[in-house]
Image 1 (cartoon, rainbow, N blue to C red):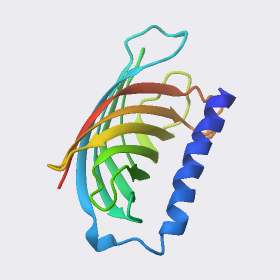
Image 2 (cartoon, rainbow, N blue to C red; image 1 turned 135 degrees about the vertical axis):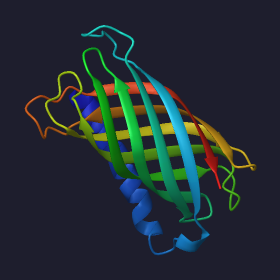
Image 3 (cartoon, rainbow, N blue to C red; image 1 turned 90 degrees about the vertical axis):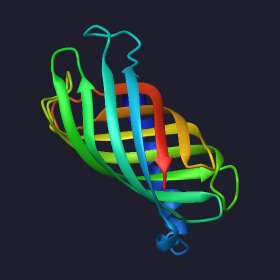
Image 4 (cartoon, rainbow, N blue to C red; image 1 turned 60 degrees about the horizontal axis):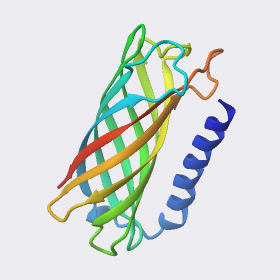
Length: 180
C-alpha cells in the first residue's frame, strides 16, 4: 500500500511541477471544454472482497494551453459511481490535470495525462472509513482533430490517511471524450 501512495504522490507532484513554470505562460482564453465518460474495472492483484468492482465516471474539464505541447485542466466530476463488493459509492469531485501532446500547437495525436481530484461521496469504499477521498491517475490516449479522444486510464482512490482505515481502490479502463 505504501508503494501505491508514493506512486500517487509522485503523479500529483508531476502535475504540480508541470503546472508551476507554465502558469505564467498559460492562455486561459484559448481554452476549450472537454466532456468525458469512463468505464473502469477494479484491478486488485488478490481481491479480498471478490471481483467485479466497476467504476463509471463523467467529467467536464476546461483545458487551456500552457506551452506549445502542454495543456492544463480544471476538472469537475459531477458523477462518480463505484460498484463495490458491499456498497455502491456515489460521489462528485474537483481536480486538476495536465496533458502532454505529441503535436505542437494543434494539441492532437498521442498524449500522456496525469490528474489529481478531491472526491466527496455517500457510502464508503470497502476498508476505507472516510467520505472524502483523493483520486489520482494517469492515462495514455489519442486526440483526433475532430474533437474526439480515446484514453487508456489507471486511477487510484484513497483517503490519504484522513481516516483510520485507508484501503485504496485501483481501477483501469477506457475513457472516451469530446473537446469543443
